[in-house]
Amino acid sequence: MNGATERLVVCMRWGQVYPADYVNVLFNACLAAAREPFRFVCLTDDADGLAPGIEALPVPDIGLTAREWTIGGVWPKLALYVADLHGLRGRCLFIDLDMVVLRDLDSFFSVDAPYVGIDAGPAWGRPGSASPPQLGTGIIAFDLGAHARLVDEFRRDKPAILKSFRTEQAFVASRLPNIQFWPEGWVISFKRKVRRPLGIDLFLAPAPPPPDAKVLAFHGTPRPVDLMSGRQFFWDRFPHLGHGRVPWMLEYWLRHGGRPFWN
Image 1 (cartoon, rainbow, N blue to C red):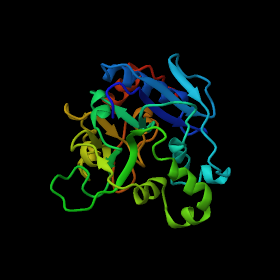
Image 2: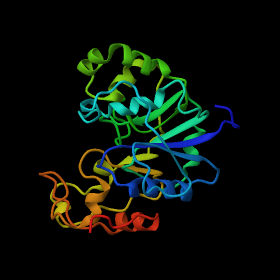
Image 3: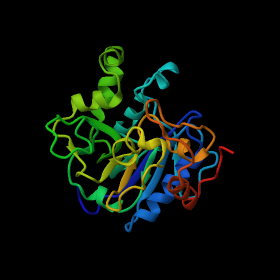
Image 4: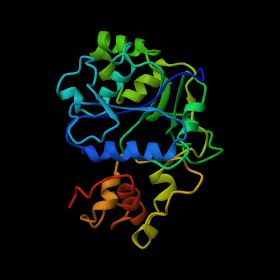
């Protein structure tokens, strides 16, 4: 990656699962966590409510039916790899809307590799584990247009790919050689590093993220909003017993311009 390459932070939002506040909070958190400039792009079907400074562009058409947008596996994310993403060029740092950006965003642009993602397999958060890596695409970096063959193959063989792979990230992992992963501790899992152990989570709220973590990843249940609304007694899945409003999560949300849309 050339040092003069334009830096783009990209997210995606479609449907009604994530209100516009999720995009705005991510945008403001990235601004607060970065020293160097970047463009912030949201690929979306609805730009209403997005903050000034966010570039809203349509999600490219990769041949998905209405049902395939919602069947699970997040297949619309493959649109990131089209040969020409609205004329954008440069290094793309894609971030899911349920990621919590804490600090030092510039480091994610400094890893000079064709494709970088989360090792979200059994070894995530367990240094020394012998388990093989397993790609997670919650936060990834790559050069725009460099992996267009993924989209070409998907368009050509969509039924077979959807049958063979449960998720878009499993398909990507099977097709890209030499995937690299973020250094240990950069992206930590809420479930594995912050949520309290079974039983203890009934009495103690999740601990704040450690000061050396750069991004806190939510994946599956719960989502960030579940920790803020205070509506549900238990926001985690049994046998986990996490409950109640989590002050540090609410403070992060409000500090970065989010509204209490759940009230």
